[in-house]
Length: 157
Image (cartoon, rainbow, N blue to C red; front, side, top):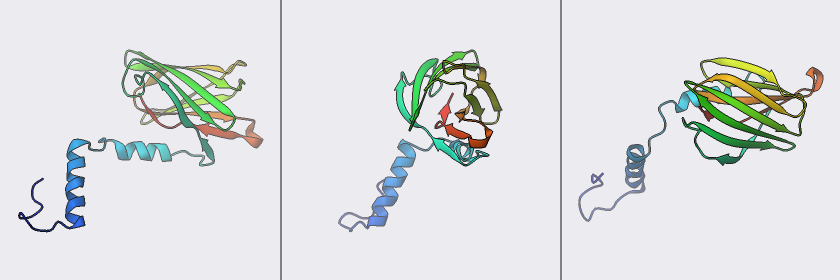
């Protein structure tokens, strides 16, 4: 990182930025699977979705390889709270939707496909045997004629 030139030589902006870039690549490189994560997030068949935002993370475990954790997502009039529990190499997702209702819930896991369930009248749902990987949860509101889909940001289990 000391190859900016001879002592007393003026440093150009390009030289300084290139050196900062090398420093960041060494100190905090992007994840190896970043491209695959982005492609997964963009590969929704129905691009007419609302993306929920992270509201709260309790105990970051569960978001990146830990045992359990609770995450809350919100979008305009819907809150999705999930609790992640690691069971061996798989995960269990216990979730709650507010307002409560019998909505379709789907979990997408990169390279593992999808599985789905329906929330009960109280808005509670369970997804068992969810494999490790980049994961998104989709909530389908309404009937087929006026269906609205909400998708969470990706979570790496």
